[in-house]
Image (cartoon, rainbow, N blue to C red; front, side):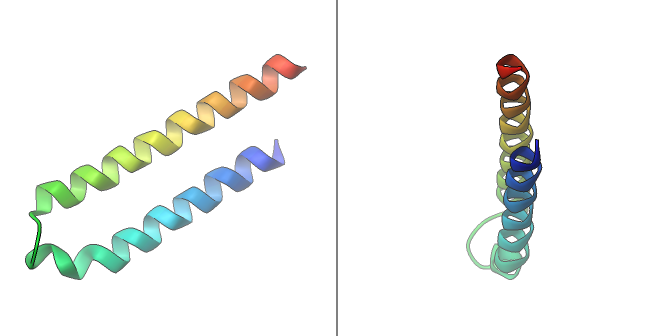
Length: 61
């Protein structure tokens, strides 16, 4: 279970870092909707991967 928590933490920190890094650029290249859409879709993927990891962990028991 520690690997699942570690993976989720690392991916969440990556998402936070990328969103902070790319925030100043939204006025130049992309719209706010695209920026928020990418962040939300990445967060959903992280949640989906966590669910899959928990199911795989529970099936091995």
